[in-house]
Length: 256
Ligand code: SF4
Image (cartoon, rainbow, N blue to C red; front, side, top):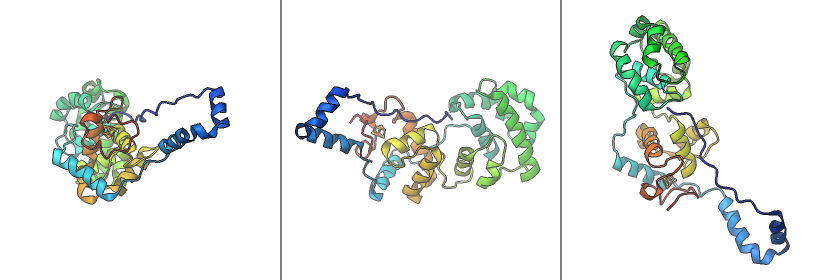
């Protein structure tokens, strides 16, 4: 998955000092303007539960069974794929792992392959040396500490080399059906822009989303938001005109 990028800050309009002074000297004519400027700086109106439900009902109607785009054949290969996806695209990871998972789809087979040969398979992925080292180390730990099975708790997954909170959330959600919310660059942007879960860090956005999204949508919410960010609410040019939730979105920069 790509690294977190913050949404573009709204353009600042610089006010020449002289004009600013003049504006403060003549409060009456500028009063209306300044009131509307203040309004646009106000925090967006909070989402009502019915509006949040409406958003996810629309996502569900459009795509009832959203799927992640990282290819895998079992929880172990999902874990490896997520570890490899840090600061990389899913497509780039898939290209490398298709051949890899044909010969190494268990921790033991990964150890048998060895770090050097693993590097050859994943050398097209950024940071592949470190990632190869982590995948071998996590395979060893899954075997020694968890009987060869990917563990099912957040703390245990996060104890594996190369796996952090986002990895744990993806694995818990996709492999074990838990209601977790992995926040990547897309979810971070959508959470902030829409106003559904504003936050300065992925963790703030994660906790905010978990708080507002009804349980019935949580299994798929992560994928709906990723796909929405990847294909509609694009970082540079969001496609607001075709956005399913453009009437509800709180972003002042939306184009409709
Ligand atoms: S209206 Fe635009 S900014 Fe808002 S969620 Fe849709 S695409 Fe993103």
